[in-house]
Amino acid sequence: VHGDTSLELTMLRLARLAPHAATTARSVAQTRAASMVARAAAGPARRAAITIQTRGYAGKDIRFGADARALLLAGVDKVADAVQVTLGPKGRNVIIQQSFGQPKITKDGVTVAKAIDLKDATENLGAQCIRVVASKTNDAAGDGTTTATVLARALYSEGCKSVAAGMNPMDLQRGIKKAVNAIVEELKRISIPVSTSEQIAQVATISANNDAALGKLIATAMEKVGKEGVVTVKDGRTLNDELEVVEGMKLDRGFISPHFVTDPKTGVVTFKDAYVLCFEKKLSTIQSIVPILERVAKAQKPLVIIAEDVDGDALTTLIVNKLRGVTQVAAVKAPGFGENRTKSLQDIAILTGGEMFTDEFGAKLEDATLEDLGTAKEITIDKDSTLVLNGGGDAADIDARCDAIREAIATSDSEYDKEKLQERLAKLKGGVAVIYCGGATDVEVGEKRDRLDDALHATRAAVLEGIVPGGGTALLRASKVLDNLQSDNFDQSIGIKIVKKAVRVPAKAIADNAGVEGSVVVGNILANPNVNYGYNAQTDEYVDMVKAGVIDPTKVVRTALVDASSIASLLTTTEALIVDLPEDKPAGGMGGMG
Image (cartoon, rainbow, N blue to C red; front, side):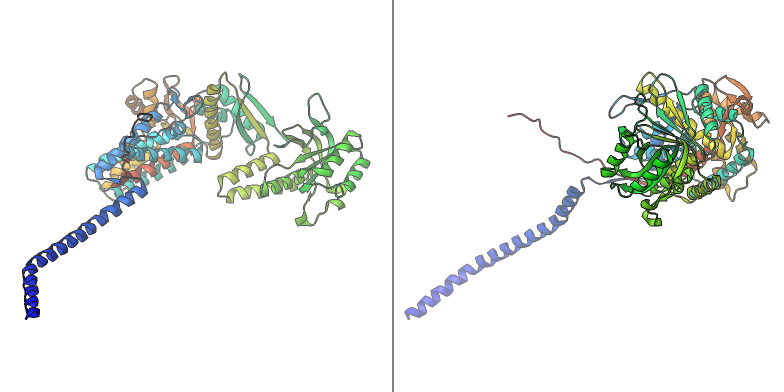
């Protein structure tokens, strides 16, 4: 009985506790479910937060349509406004803050464009695009960067208006391209070949901001070294500009040891009727050079050894022989590095009429005879350079070598390789001229060097493709062919009109910078039938531009127009732009407190 009573009491307690247990179970289940939902909801947020933290930015700003094009145009305008003030003979300078050193003062369009970096990311996209125009024109022609910049701005500005008015941007682009091609063909037709030193001086003078002295200096340099010669510009050490012309082969390596010096007063080695030995490898042992030294000593002529390097016992032997008066000898490191050094040694061997000793050809130095050595009438060596004059090489062999280098220049895609090949060609066939920029301060020298570089590139371009009337006149004259140019539809015809309006901007800007009304000047030029008739901003008069010497290289004008139209038409077809949003960085507390 007692057991039955205990069972009944237990059952009674369970019955009473059942509702509470059910409620508690439901509460726990609901709590767990809510917790799982909260974790599931928080998961993407946590993942997004991690991604943002990893990438280091808050997101992207995306703009569309007219809003995007207007922001790009704002950036384009800021760069073009800064560059445009330098255009023409009465254009002004721009002063640029440098991250280190003195500020830079320049009148070079591409230098100004490259210095501009805008704070607003969307506007900076437009600025970067317009910098591409200036840089590309500078790379291709070396001048005309300011013209290219103002043309690009004019084309894009008009393109934005047309797209906003409902024109199809792709048809506008086709119309612009068709008009540019027509103008380029007309420029080629009216181009005048450069044939005289006076024309070269005129081109150089215009590009050097109407500095006649610099123009004459460049013309003299190009006349002396020839079309295949190299003209370089370096900083001078005096107040005046200087021209140094080297008509032989000059190597940018001097003697290995000062013990080879023949004139202690000047510190140079000077040999007459010398032998030249070209060796591709390094000379370190005496066994390989003793036989040829004995033969040269018997001939009683000087010897110049040009090799990768000379050291160890070989260098000691040469110095001892020189000091004891056994033979006149000097050693020079071969110029260049790697394959370029080997090619340069071959050039020297051909110029002097000798052989280049190398393991590849099986020519051993121990077997060398006097007939295998090159010769030169005069060789001058200082601590920095070597000058070889009147090499004994055969003219036909030298011409064949020059032809091979010209072919290599034509097939090369690398600007660096082309420059090195051109230098080798100049040393073999032409000559090397160096213009040293003079000035009272480093800032003045830098500004003058920029103008000289522009003038040099413009002069080379003029020799290649000829000249056209300057001052923006050529583009105005060439634009007349657009009057009869046929288009496929109405939108393309608007693209042609955009180009016709834009090519007036350079002439207008030159006149505006000279303090006269540009629109009136453009109207007066177009009203005259003479193709060479234009406005000389320097003298403030209308003249025959070619006779007055106000001329531009055809290549510079053509490249400026083509590059400007390329970027402007692409910008016109832009419908969306994407930039990074600025990252929100928490404000840092003040250090050193508390």
